Image 1 (cartoon, rainbow, N blue to C red):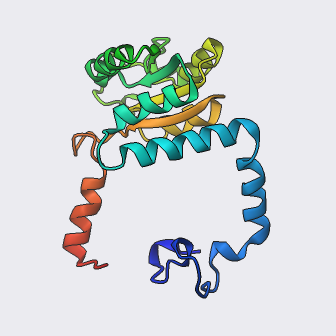
Image 2 (image 1 turned 90 degrees about the vertical axis):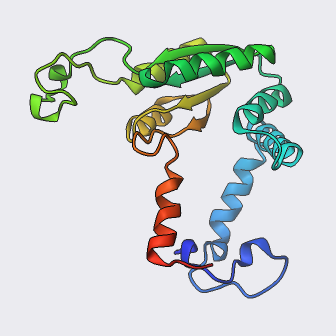
Image 3 (image 1 turned 30 degrees about the vertical axis):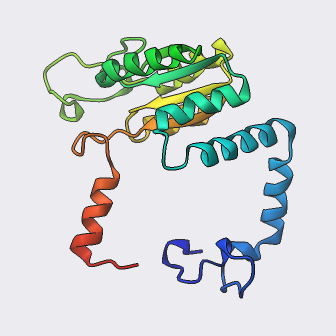
Length: 203
């Protein structure tokens, strides 16, 4: 399975030969996915996402798409797990959601103020050695939002790995508003666009 290298892309065509080793040959896997997609909660969410995609395609920014998805699902509240370095952005997002009559319950990554030393993280692994630094606690963020019983979570700028832990322990649907990239102003695809140019990758 190397879909990134595929030149056939039978998956978006009505007919044609399926390449060897294509995931589309896994009829058991596809049948299981269809079964899960047809489950009531998943089906409703999946259909709403398709409607939002079609209505806003090329017109709505991701923030608006999140608001419209909430409206399509009749969600009045959502959870926001954000990085402390993006508190201003979190406030702006919450304010925009309120304009759509959506309440935002938010939790910051540093919740708990737990010193890094408590988890065996030494001075050599701190951002600023010799200073007091606390861990990010994405599991606490997830557990808190689980208690709030929000139907949808939004991730805003959690670190690589911390985002994975949040998703693992969150019980609600979770979408990403922005991915953390301190070098590229939270636009990680910039590195891939540069790689395409530097490596001479072509369509």
